[in-house]
Image (cartoon, rainbow, N blue to C red; front, top):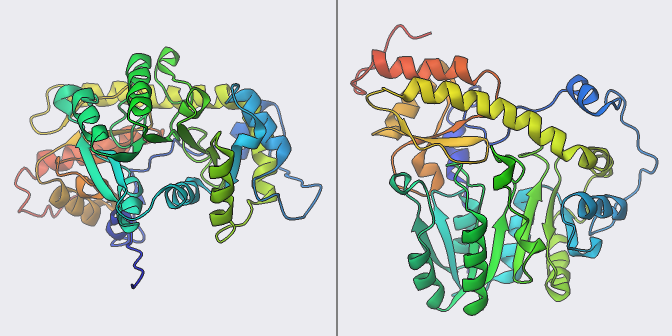
Length: 378
C-alpha cells in the first residue's frame, strides 16, 4: 500500500504568500536575549556547551530531573522522553498507540495533526464539535457516548488551540473517570499549560494525576521560545515508553544538546516566563473586547487560557485571502482547523496585535462586500 503524507492545511494556506507575516501564530511573542537576561538575571548573549556529544535518546537526565521538580512533581525523570518539538512527540505517541481501525476521539476546531495523524494511520476518527454558543465547553454526554463505542484513545488539547477554551478541575476529573471506566487512554496536548489568564484555572498535567494519560509539552508555546526545538512526552507506562523510543530512533534519535542546555537554565523560571506572556495576552484581550463590543460582523467568545482566540466571520476563507493579498498578513481560516464553523485564528500573544487588528477591522469596514477588492489599502 502506498504511503501518503498529506501536508497540513495551514501550511498549504500560508505557503500561498511566502513573504507574508502571520498574525495567527499560536506562540506568544518570542523573547530576545536581552529580555531573558532582565527576567532571569542570567547572561543569554553567550551560550556555552561543555560537551559537544550526542544526547541520550530519552533526553538529558539533569534536564528531565529539573522538569519533574518544577513541572511534574508526581512523576519520575524516567517518565519523560525529550523530542525534537511537539510535532515529533505527537507523531511518536500516535504511532506507538494506534493500529488501523482503532477508534480515536478528538474535538474540533482542532490543531490539525490531532485529527490528521490518526486518519493517516487508518484509525476510525470521531470529532466532537465545540461551540462558542456553549462557551466552547465539552459536552460530557456526547463524549461518554463516543467513549462507549469501543474507543481506544481520547485526544485532549486544553488550554485549547485555536479557541483558548479550557476545562475546569471538575470536568477534568469527570473525563479521567469516564476514560478509566471505559478503558480508554488519553493523549493530552498541554503545550499552552501556563498561559491561564487566572492561575487558579491551571490544571495539573493529566499524566501527573492519571496512569492512563500521556502529556505533551513544548518550549515554543507557553514559554515563547520557538527557536528552541524541544518537546517532551510524559508517560508512566514503561512498556509504552520503550515502544515510543523505538519509533523516535527512526526520527531525531536525540535532541540538540544546545536546546537541552538552554532549557535547563529556563525551566526554573517557568512561572516568571508564563507571567510575562499572559500579561501581553490579557492586555490584548482587553483591546479586542472593546473593538468587537459593537462590531456588526466580527464576534469572539474569549476563552480562559492560551495565546489565541477564534474570531467568527462569515465567508472567512475569502476574507482571509483578501486580507493576505492586500496587507501581506496571514490569518488562518477555519478550514485549517478541521471545522466548518466560520472564522479565523488570531494570535493574542504579540505586542503589535493592536496595530494589526486595526487593519483587519478596518478592512471589513471599507469592504463590506467581500466580492469587491479594496484598491487603496496600505
